[in-house]
Image (cartoon, rainbow, N blue to C red; front, side, top):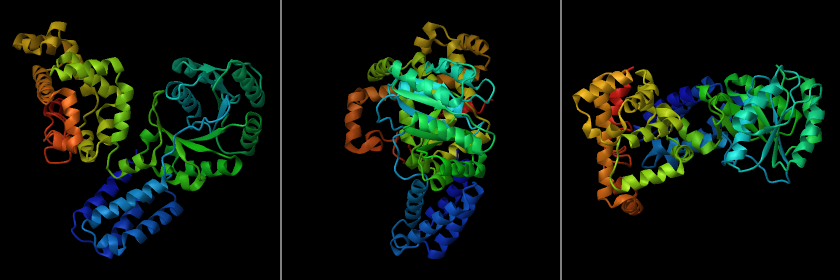
Length: 484
Protein backbone atom coordinates (compact mmCIF):
# COMPACT_ATOMS: atom_id res chain seq x y z
CA UNK A 1 0.00 0.00 0.00
CA UNK A 2 1.42 3.42 -1.07
CA UNK A 3 4.82 1.81 -1.74
CA UNK A 4 5.79 3.96 -4.73
CA UNK A 5 4.64 7.19 -3.06
CA UNK A 6 6.33 6.28 0.20
CA UNK A 7 9.62 5.59 -1.58
CA UNK A 8 9.56 8.92 -3.44
CA UNK A 9 8.66 10.96 -0.37
CA UNK A 10 11.24 9.09 1.70
CA UNK A 11 13.99 10.15 -0.72
CA UNK A 12 12.85 13.79 -0.66
CA UNK A 13 12.66 14.01 3.13
CA UNK A 14 15.91 12.14 3.72
CA UNK A 15 17.64 14.97 1.82
CA UNK A 16 15.82 17.63 3.85
CA UNK A 17 16.64 15.98 7.17
CA UNK A 18 20.27 15.60 6.18
CA UNK A 19 20.79 19.37 5.94
CA UNK A 20 21.45 21.55 8.96
CA UNK A 21 19.74 24.63 7.52
CA UNK A 22 17.06 25.14 4.88
CA UNK A 23 16.34 28.09 2.63
CA UNK A 24 12.94 28.93 1.23
CA UNK A 25 14.13 27.68 -2.17
CA UNK A 26 15.11 24.31 -0.63
CA UNK A 27 11.57 23.87 0.66
CA UNK A 28 9.98 24.92 -2.63
CA UNK A 29 12.21 22.52 -4.57
CA UNK A 30 11.23 19.70 -2.19
CA UNK A 31 7.53 20.56 -2.55
CA UNK A 32 7.89 20.44 -6.34
CA UNK A 33 9.14 16.86 -6.02
CA UNK A 34 6.32 16.03 -3.59
CA UNK A 35 3.83 17.41 -6.14
CA UNK A 36 5.23 15.16 -8.88
CA UNK A 37 5.19 12.16 -6.51
CA UNK A 38 1.51 12.74 -5.66
CA UNK A 39 0.52 13.11 -9.32
CA UNK A 40 2.40 9.92 -10.20
CA UNK A 41 0.53 8.20 -7.36
CA UNK A 42 -2.68 9.08 -9.27
CA UNK A 43 -3.92 11.64 -6.74
CA UNK A 44 -6.53 13.99 -8.23
CA UNK A 45 -5.03 17.29 -9.47
CA UNK A 46 -7.27 19.61 -7.36
CA UNK A 47 -6.30 17.61 -4.24
CA UNK A 48 -2.59 17.91 -5.09
CA UNK A 49 -2.80 21.66 -5.67
CA UNK A 50 -4.57 22.29 -2.38
CA UNK A 51 -2.14 20.03 -0.47
CA UNK A 52 1.03 21.63 -1.91
CA UNK A 53 -0.26 25.18 -1.37
CA UNK A 54 -1.10 24.52 2.27
CA UNK A 55 2.16 22.72 3.06
CA UNK A 56 4.36 25.27 1.27
CA UNK A 57 2.71 28.20 3.04
CA UNK A 58 3.41 26.67 6.45
CA UNK A 59 6.82 25.22 5.61
CA UNK A 60 8.40 28.47 4.38
CA UNK A 61 7.48 30.27 7.58
CA UNK A 62 10.36 31.73 9.61
CA UNK A 63 9.55 29.53 12.63
CA UNK A 64 10.30 26.48 10.52
CA UNK A 65 13.35 27.66 8.59
CA UNK A 66 15.04 29.09 11.71
CA UNK A 67 14.22 26.13 13.95
CA UNK A 68 16.90 23.75 15.23
CA UNK A 69 15.62 20.89 13.02
CA UNK A 70 13.94 22.51 9.99
CA UNK A 71 13.89 19.23 8.02
CA UNK A 72 11.98 17.45 10.78
CA UNK A 73 9.58 20.38 11.06
CA UNK A 74 8.77 20.20 7.35
CA UNK A 75 8.16 16.44 7.61
CA UNK A 76 5.77 17.06 10.53
CA UNK A 77 3.87 19.67 8.50
CA UNK A 78 3.57 17.21 5.60
CA UNK A 79 2.44 14.47 8.00
CA UNK A 80 -0.29 16.72 9.46
CA UNK A 81 -1.42 17.72 5.96
CA UNK A 82 -1.54 14.07 4.88
CA UNK A 83 -3.68 13.19 7.90
CA UNK A 84 -6.03 16.04 6.97
CA UNK A 85 -6.13 14.89 3.32
CA UNK A 86 -7.02 11.36 4.39
CA UNK A 87 -9.87 12.51 6.60
CA UNK A 88 -8.48 14.25 9.65
CA UNK A 89 -9.57 12.74 12.92
CA UNK A 90 -9.66 8.95 13.17
CA UNK A 91 -13.22 7.62 12.84
CA UNK A 92 -14.47 4.78 15.07
CA UNK A 93 -15.69 2.65 12.17
CA UNK A 94 -19.38 1.80 12.12
CA UNK A 95 -22.07 3.94 13.70
CA UNK A 96 -24.48 1.43 15.26
CA UNK A 97 -26.11 3.87 17.63
CA UNK A 98 -29.74 3.30 16.64
CA UNK A 99 -32.68 1.07 17.48
CA UNK A 100 -32.15 -2.47 16.14
CA UNK A 101 -32.11 -3.71 13.53
CA UNK A 102 -29.50 -1.14 12.44
CA UNK A 103 -29.35 -1.25 8.64
CA UNK A 104 -26.06 -1.01 6.76
CA UNK A 105 -26.45 -0.65 3.02
CA UNK A 106 -23.54 -1.59 0.75
CA UNK A 107 -23.40 0.15 -2.64
CA UNK A 108 -20.95 0.22 -5.55
CA UNK A 109 -20.20 -1.15 -8.99
CA UNK A 110 -19.82 -4.80 -9.97
CA UNK A 111 -16.37 -6.19 -9.28
CA UNK A 112 -15.54 -3.72 -6.52
CA UNK A 113 -15.64 -6.44 -3.85
CA UNK A 114 -19.01 -5.48 -2.36
CA UNK A 115 -20.22 -9.01 -1.52
CA UNK A 116 -16.92 -10.09 0.05
CA UNK A 117 -16.76 -6.83 2.02
CA UNK A 118 -20.32 -7.44 3.27
CA UNK A 119 -19.21 -10.82 4.65
CA UNK A 120 -16.06 -9.28 6.19
CA UNK A 121 -18.20 -6.64 7.91
CA UNK A 122 -20.60 -9.34 9.14
CA UNK A 123 -17.67 -11.17 10.72
CA UNK A 124 -16.34 -7.92 12.24
CA UNK A 125 -19.74 -7.00 13.69
CA UNK A 126 -20.08 -10.44 15.27
CA UNK A 127 -16.54 -10.64 16.68
CA UNK A 128 -15.53 -7.03 17.43
CA UNK A 129 -18.87 -5.41 18.20
CA UNK A 130 -20.40 -8.54 19.75
CA UNK A 131 -23.68 -8.08 17.89
CA UNK A 132 -26.00 -10.47 16.05
CA UNK A 133 -25.92 -9.81 12.30
CA UNK A 134 -27.99 -10.87 9.29
CA UNK A 135 -26.84 -10.49 5.68
CA UNK A 136 -29.14 -10.23 2.67
CA UNK A 137 -28.19 -10.13 -1.02
CA UNK A 138 -30.36 -7.85 -3.16
CA UNK A 139 -28.38 -8.60 -6.32
CA UNK A 140 -30.77 -10.37 -8.69
CA UNK A 141 -28.78 -9.45 -11.82
CA UNK A 142 -25.39 -11.08 -11.36
CA UNK A 143 -25.52 -14.89 -11.67
CA UNK A 144 -25.10 -16.70 -8.34
CA UNK A 145 -24.59 -13.43 -6.42
CA UNK A 146 -27.06 -14.47 -3.71
CA UNK A 147 -25.50 -17.94 -3.48
CA UNK A 148 -22.05 -16.33 -3.11
CA UNK A 149 -23.16 -14.36 -0.04
CA UNK A 150 -24.79 -17.50 1.40
CA UNK A 151 -21.51 -19.44 1.08
CA UNK A 152 -19.50 -16.57 2.59
CA UNK A 153 -22.03 -16.34 5.42
CA UNK A 154 -21.44 -19.99 6.25
CA UNK A 155 -17.68 -19.39 6.28
CA UNK A 156 -17.88 -16.46 8.72
CA UNK A 157 -20.76 -18.05 10.65
CA UNK A 158 -23.15 -15.13 10.07
CA UNK A 159 -26.77 -15.79 9.09
CA UNK A 160 -28.00 -14.93 5.58
CA UNK A 161 -31.53 -14.31 4.42
CA UNK A 162 -33.01 -17.41 2.69
CA UNK A 163 -33.09 -17.04 -1.10
CA UNK A 164 -36.54 -16.77 -2.73
CA UNK A 165 -36.23 -16.96 -6.54
CA UNK A 166 -38.02 -14.27 -8.54
CA UNK A 167 -38.16 -11.57 -5.86
CA UNK A 168 -37.09 -8.03 -6.73
CA UNK A 169 -34.56 -6.00 -4.65
CA UNK A 170 -37.26 -3.92 -2.89
CA UNK A 171 -39.19 -7.08 -1.98
CA UNK A 172 -36.01 -8.72 -0.63
CA UNK A 173 -35.25 -5.59 1.43
CA UNK A 174 -38.77 -5.64 2.93
CA UNK A 175 -38.51 -9.35 3.76
CA UNK A 176 -35.03 -8.85 5.26
CA UNK A 177 -36.32 -6.12 7.59
CA UNK A 178 -39.23 -8.28 8.74
CA UNK A 179 -36.95 -11.27 9.28
CA UNK A 180 -34.44 -9.16 11.23
CA UNK A 181 -37.16 -7.90 13.58
CA UNK A 182 -38.57 -11.38 14.16
CA UNK A 183 -35.12 -12.85 14.94
CA UNK A 184 -34.04 -9.93 17.19
CA UNK A 185 -31.16 -9.11 14.85
CA UNK A 186 -28.92 -6.21 15.90
CA UNK A 187 -27.44 -5.32 12.49
CA UNK A 188 -28.87 -5.98 9.01
CA UNK A 189 -26.40 -5.83 6.10
CA UNK A 190 -27.92 -5.24 2.66
CA UNK A 191 -25.66 -6.16 -0.26
CA UNK A 192 -27.19 -4.20 -3.14
CA UNK A 193 -26.77 -4.93 -6.85
CA UNK A 194 -24.00 -3.31 -8.87
CA UNK A 195 -23.59 -2.48 -12.55
CA UNK A 196 -20.59 -2.48 -14.86
CA UNK A 197 -20.87 1.32 -14.94
CA UNK A 198 -22.92 4.04 -13.27
CA UNK A 199 -26.37 4.30 -14.88
CA UNK A 200 -29.78 5.64 -13.90
CA UNK A 201 -31.34 2.19 -13.45
CA UNK A 202 -28.72 1.39 -10.80
CA UNK A 203 -29.32 4.68 -9.01
CA UNK A 204 -33.12 4.33 -9.08
CA UNK A 205 -32.94 0.82 -7.62
CA UNK A 206 -30.50 1.94 -4.93
CA UNK A 207 -32.68 4.88 -3.91
CA UNK A 208 -35.82 2.69 -3.79
CA UNK A 209 -34.08 0.26 -1.41
CA UNK A 210 -32.87 3.17 0.75
CA UNK A 211 -36.44 4.51 1.08
CA UNK A 212 -37.64 1.13 2.36
CA UNK A 213 -34.69 0.26 4.62
CA UNK A 214 -33.79 3.77 5.93
CA UNK A 215 -30.16 2.71 6.49
CA UNK A 216 -28.04 4.11 9.32
CA UNK A 217 -24.91 3.56 7.24
CA UNK A 218 -24.57 3.71 3.45
CA UNK A 219 -21.08 2.49 2.56
CA UNK A 220 -19.67 2.92 -0.93
CA UNK A 221 -17.33 0.03 -1.81
CA UNK A 222 -14.65 1.10 -4.29
CA UNK A 223 -11.76 -0.82 -5.84
CA UNK A 224 -8.64 1.20 -5.03
CA UNK A 225 -6.82 -0.27 -8.05
CA UNK A 226 -9.20 1.66 -10.31
CA UNK A 227 -7.30 4.89 -9.53
CA UNK A 228 -8.98 7.98 -11.00
CA UNK A 229 -11.94 5.85 -12.18
CA UNK A 230 -12.59 5.02 -8.51
CA UNK A 231 -12.66 8.74 -7.73
CA UNK A 232 -15.13 9.39 -10.58
CA UNK A 233 -17.37 6.54 -9.41
CA UNK A 234 -17.36 7.96 -5.88
CA UNK A 235 -18.32 11.37 -7.20
CA UNK A 236 -21.28 9.91 -9.16
CA UNK A 237 -22.61 8.00 -6.14
CA UNK A 238 -22.19 11.02 -3.87
CA UNK A 239 -24.43 13.07 -6.18
CA UNK A 240 -27.20 10.42 -6.06
CA UNK A 241 -27.32 9.13 -2.47
CA UNK A 242 -26.35 10.32 0.99
CA UNK A 243 -23.26 8.23 1.74
CA UNK A 244 -21.92 7.89 5.27
CA UNK A 245 -18.53 6.42 4.38
CA UNK A 246 -16.27 4.65 1.91
CA UNK A 247 -14.67 1.19 1.94
CA UNK A 248 -11.56 0.87 -0.24
CA UNK A 249 -10.87 -2.71 -1.33
CA UNK A 250 -7.61 -4.26 -2.56
CA UNK A 251 -5.51 -1.71 -0.70
CA UNK A 252 -2.84 -4.37 -0.26
CA UNK A 253 -2.29 -4.41 -4.02
CA UNK A 254 -2.28 -0.66 -4.69
CA UNK A 255 1.30 0.62 -4.70
CA UNK A 256 0.18 4.13 -5.69
CA UNK A 257 -2.69 4.90 -3.31
CA UNK A 258 -4.08 7.86 -5.25
CA UNK A 259 -7.70 6.74 -4.76
CA UNK A 260 -7.34 6.81 -0.97
CA UNK A 261 -5.69 10.23 -0.96
CA UNK A 262 -8.38 11.74 -3.23
CA UNK A 263 -11.51 10.06 -1.83
CA UNK A 264 -12.16 12.29 1.19
CA UNK A 265 -11.83 15.48 -0.88
CA UNK A 266 -14.17 14.17 -3.60
CA UNK A 267 -16.92 12.63 -1.44
CA UNK A 268 -16.64 14.69 1.73
CA UNK A 269 -17.14 11.39 3.58
CA UNK A 270 -14.62 9.42 5.66
CA UNK A 271 -12.89 6.27 4.46
CA UNK A 272 -14.12 3.88 7.14
CA UNK A 273 -12.48 0.58 6.16
CA UNK A 274 -9.73 -0.77 3.96
CA UNK A 275 -9.73 -4.28 2.50
CA UNK A 276 -6.15 -5.55 2.77
CA UNK A 277 -6.38 -9.10 1.46
CA UNK A 278 -8.64 -11.89 0.25
CA UNK A 279 -9.09 -13.56 3.65
CA UNK A 280 -12.36 -12.81 5.41
CA UNK A 281 -10.61 -11.18 8.36
CA UNK A 282 -8.53 -8.89 6.09
CA UNK A 283 -10.51 -5.73 6.80
CA UNK A 284 -8.98 -2.84 8.75
CA UNK A 285 -10.54 0.27 10.23
CA UNK A 286 -9.05 3.13 8.20
CA UNK A 287 -7.16 5.46 10.54
CA UNK A 288 -5.75 8.56 8.74
CA UNK A 289 -3.00 9.19 11.31
CA UNK A 290 -1.69 5.64 11.03
CA UNK A 291 -1.83 5.57 7.23
CA UNK A 292 0.05 8.89 7.04
CA UNK A 293 2.69 7.40 9.34
CA UNK A 294 3.13 4.43 7.01
CA UNK A 295 3.41 6.66 3.94
CA UNK A 296 6.17 8.74 5.55
CA UNK A 297 8.00 5.68 6.90
CA UNK A 298 7.16 6.49 10.53
CA UNK A 299 5.64 3.07 11.05
CA UNK A 300 2.39 1.90 12.60
CA UNK A 301 3.27 0.24 15.88
CA UNK A 302 -0.33 0.56 17.15
CA UNK A 303 -1.54 -1.73 14.35
CA UNK A 304 1.16 -4.26 15.22
CA UNK A 305 -0.05 -4.30 18.83
CA UNK A 306 -3.65 -4.75 17.67
CA UNK A 307 -2.68 -7.55 15.30
CA UNK A 308 -0.76 -9.23 18.11
CA UNK A 309 -3.75 -8.95 20.46
CA UNK A 310 -5.97 -10.57 17.83
CA UNK A 311 -3.47 -13.31 16.97
CA UNK A 312 -2.38 -14.36 20.45
CA UNK A 313 -4.79 -16.51 22.38
CA UNK A 314 -5.27 -15.53 26.01
CA UNK A 315 -4.29 -18.90 27.48
CA UNK A 316 -1.20 -19.12 25.27
CA UNK A 317 -0.16 -15.60 26.31
CA UNK A 318 -0.47 -16.49 30.00
CA UNK A 319 1.56 -19.66 29.49
CA UNK A 320 4.31 -17.74 27.67
CA UNK A 321 4.37 -15.03 30.35
CA UNK A 322 4.81 -17.66 33.04
CA UNK A 323 7.67 -19.33 31.18
CA UNK A 324 9.34 -15.98 30.43
CA UNK A 325 9.22 -15.12 34.12
CA UNK A 326 11.14 -18.35 34.79
CA UNK A 327 13.62 -17.69 31.98
CA UNK A 328 12.40 -20.71 30.01
CA UNK A 329 12.23 -20.89 26.23
CA UNK A 330 12.28 -24.15 24.26
CA UNK A 331 11.53 -25.10 20.65
CA UNK A 332 7.79 -25.35 21.36
CA UNK A 333 7.86 -21.71 22.46
CA UNK A 334 9.81 -20.68 19.36
CA UNK A 335 7.31 -22.52 17.16
CA UNK A 336 4.45 -20.71 18.87
CA UNK A 337 6.14 -17.35 18.20
CA UNK A 338 6.70 -18.17 14.52
CA UNK A 339 3.05 -19.16 14.06
CA UNK A 340 1.90 -15.93 15.70
CA UNK A 341 4.05 -13.99 13.23
CA UNK A 342 2.28 -15.80 10.40
CA UNK A 343 -1.13 -14.93 11.87
CA UNK A 344 -0.12 -11.28 12.10
CA UNK A 345 0.58 -11.11 8.37
CA UNK A 346 4.12 -12.44 8.09
CA UNK A 347 7.52 -10.79 8.02
CA UNK A 348 6.80 -8.37 5.19
CA UNK A 349 3.61 -7.00 6.77
CA UNK A 350 5.28 -6.48 10.14
CA UNK A 351 8.41 -4.89 8.67
CA UNK A 352 6.23 -2.45 6.74
CA UNK A 353 4.65 -1.24 9.99
CA UNK A 354 7.83 -0.84 12.03
CA UNK A 355 9.33 2.69 12.21
CA UNK A 356 12.51 2.98 10.18
CA UNK A 357 12.09 -0.48 8.65
CA UNK A 358 11.24 0.69 5.13
CA UNK A 359 14.75 0.05 3.82
CA UNK A 360 14.94 -3.31 5.58
CA UNK A 361 11.66 -4.34 3.94
CA UNK A 362 13.00 -3.25 0.54
CA UNK A 363 16.13 -5.33 1.12
CA UNK A 364 13.96 -8.34 2.02
CA UNK A 365 11.93 -7.92 -1.18
CA UNK A 366 15.01 -7.39 -3.37
CA UNK A 367 16.72 -10.54 -2.11
CA UNK A 368 13.61 -12.66 -2.67
CA UNK A 369 12.88 -13.25 1.01
CA UNK A 370 9.32 -14.22 1.76
CA UNK A 371 7.19 -15.84 4.43
CA UNK A 372 8.16 -19.33 3.26
CA UNK A 373 11.08 -18.97 5.65
CA UNK A 374 8.58 -19.17 8.53
CA UNK A 375 7.08 -22.34 7.07
CA UNK A 376 10.59 -23.78 6.59
CA UNK A 377 11.46 -23.14 10.24
CA UNK A 378 8.16 -24.64 11.36
CA UNK A 379 8.95 -27.75 9.28
CA UNK A 380 12.38 -28.07 10.95
CA UNK A 381 10.82 -27.91 14.42
CA UNK A 382 8.10 -30.35 13.30
CA UNK A 383 10.76 -32.89 12.34
CA UNK A 384 12.06 -32.97 15.93
CA UNK A 385 10.73 -35.41 18.50
CA UNK A 386 8.71 -34.00 21.43
CA UNK A 387 11.73 -34.65 23.67
CA UNK A 388 14.06 -32.74 21.31
CA UNK A 389 11.68 -29.79 21.13
CA UNK A 390 11.63 -29.62 24.91
CA UNK A 391 15.42 -30.04 25.21
CA UNK A 392 17.24 -28.62 22.13
CA UNK A 393 20.59 -29.34 23.84
CA UNK A 394 20.05 -33.03 22.93
CA UNK A 395 20.54 -32.28 19.25
CA UNK A 396 23.84 -33.86 18.24
CA UNK A 397 25.19 -34.21 14.68
CA UNK A 398 23.30 -37.44 13.99
CA UNK A 399 19.96 -36.00 15.13
CA UNK A 400 20.51 -32.83 13.09
CA UNK A 401 21.07 -34.90 9.92
CA UNK A 402 17.79 -36.77 10.56
CA UNK A 403 15.89 -33.51 11.18
CA UNK A 404 17.34 -31.89 8.03
CA UNK A 405 16.29 -34.84 5.87
CA UNK A 406 12.83 -34.92 7.46
CA UNK A 407 12.20 -31.22 6.79
CA UNK A 408 13.85 -31.04 3.35
CA UNK A 409 16.61 -28.58 4.35
CA UNK A 410 20.36 -28.62 4.92
CA UNK A 411 22.02 -29.28 8.29
CA UNK A 412 23.32 -25.70 8.27
CA UNK A 413 19.69 -24.49 8.22
CA UNK A 414 19.00 -26.55 11.34
CA UNK A 415 22.08 -24.99 12.97
CA UNK A 416 20.89 -21.47 12.09
CA UNK A 417 17.50 -22.16 13.67
CA UNK A 418 19.20 -23.49 16.82
CA UNK A 419 21.37 -20.37 16.94
CA UNK A 420 18.27 -18.18 16.72
CA UNK A 421 16.68 -20.18 19.53
CA UNK A 422 19.79 -19.68 21.68
CA UNK A 423 19.67 -15.90 21.11
CA UNK A 424 16.03 -15.75 22.19
CA UNK A 425 16.63 -18.07 25.14
CA UNK A 426 19.40 -15.74 26.37
CA UNK A 427 16.98 -12.83 26.17
CA UNK A 428 14.42 -14.73 28.29
CA UNK A 429 17.07 -15.42 30.93
CA UNK A 430 17.98 -11.73 30.92
CA UNK A 431 14.34 -10.88 31.62
CA UNK A 432 14.37 -13.33 34.53
CA UNK A 433 17.47 -11.59 36.00
CA UNK A 434 15.61 -8.29 35.85
CA UNK A 435 12.90 -9.70 38.09
CA UNK A 436 10.65 -11.26 35.48
CA UNK A 437 7.87 -9.40 33.73
CA UNK A 438 6.98 -7.47 36.87
CA UNK A 439 10.47 -6.10 37.22
CA UNK A 440 10.57 -5.33 33.53
CA UNK A 441 7.31 -3.38 33.77
CA UNK A 442 8.76 -1.25 36.59
CA UNK A 443 11.81 -0.48 34.50
CA UNK A 444 9.62 0.52 31.56
CA UNK A 445 7.96 3.11 33.76
CA UNK A 446 11.28 4.72 34.70
CA UNK A 447 12.35 5.80 31.27
CA UNK A 448 11.01 3.67 28.49
CA UNK A 449 12.30 0.62 26.74
CA UNK A 450 15.64 2.08 25.74
CA UNK A 451 16.47 3.14 29.29
CA UNK A 452 15.23 -0.13 30.77
CA UNK A 453 17.10 -2.52 28.55
CA UNK A 454 20.14 -0.97 26.82
CA UNK A 455 20.58 -2.40 23.37
CA UNK A 456 16.96 -3.54 23.09
CA UNK A 457 14.97 -0.49 22.11
CA UNK A 458 14.65 3.11 21.56
CA UNK A 459 16.24 4.09 18.32
CA UNK A 460 19.93 3.98 19.23
CA UNK A 461 22.51 2.09 17.24
CA UNK A 462 21.92 -0.97 19.39
CA UNK A 463 18.16 -0.79 18.95
CA UNK A 464 15.99 -3.73 18.10
CA UNK A 465 14.79 -6.76 19.98
CA UNK A 466 16.76 -9.13 22.22
CA UNK A 467 19.53 -10.74 20.26
CA UNK A 468 18.60 -8.94 17.07
CA UNK A 469 21.59 -6.62 16.87
CA UNK A 470 20.75 -3.26 15.34
CA UNK A 471 17.89 -4.44 13.18
CA UNK A 472 14.59 -6.18 13.67
CA UNK A 473 15.62 -9.60 12.37
CA UNK A 474 17.84 -12.03 14.30
CA UNK A 475 21.08 -12.72 12.43
CA UNK A 476 20.25 -16.44 12.31
CA UNK A 477 16.79 -15.70 10.89
CA UNK A 478 18.38 -13.32 8.38
CA UNK A 479 20.69 -16.13 7.21
CA UNK A 480 17.76 -18.53 6.87
CA UNK A 481 15.82 -15.98 4.84
CA UNK A 482 18.60 -15.69 2.28
CA UNK A 483 18.06 -19.35 1.36
CA UNK A 484 15.26 -19.65 -1.18
